Length: 227
Image (cartoon, rainbow, N blue to C red; front, side, top):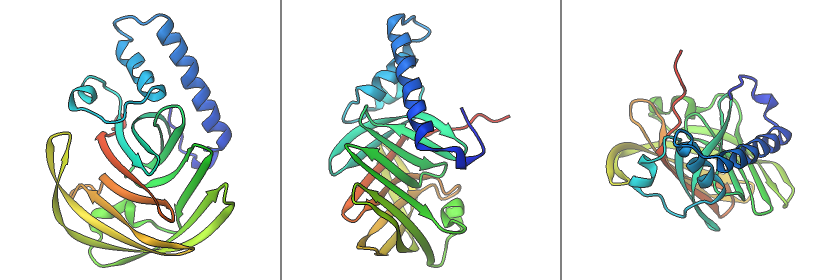
């Protein structure tokens, strides 16, 4: 399901999407035919997450998958929902990660906590491959249950060099970008490894809050159907 109105992407819609996934899982597992086996395996990934991906496991499932590592979670996340440019990835039944179409982390929910991140104004991540000189990124964060809302953080995004990144045994030559974060108690660095031609972020280390970093690796990216 895809919608162009991102403003409609609300907590209620996220809860509804999760409920729909659970209902679909129940139906699939009640009568799993050969034709539905791949889909059923995807829902098993969503609700019974493996810790580490394997090339064989990813290849055996046609659905988008992403490796996720945080200080309190290691999981294979599966794409469960798309609303406009926002993607909702399920890492087991207790964590959900939201990304944009370029691989930028927009937020997460899990284990009694919630994080939100947004870029004010035009985002350089929409055309990352064109970033050559340092760019200032004005960000805002929400952190709960700390109830820190609209926390101002400034990022300085700089282009690095080309680096070889291994993803499930396949080497990729990716462009590195570093974003130095300052303000609101944040003092750290986001790192992105992106496709030099498209700017799509294959691997990254992105802050959700001070000291809380999510490492994301695209194993089988989401590719929207073309008309």
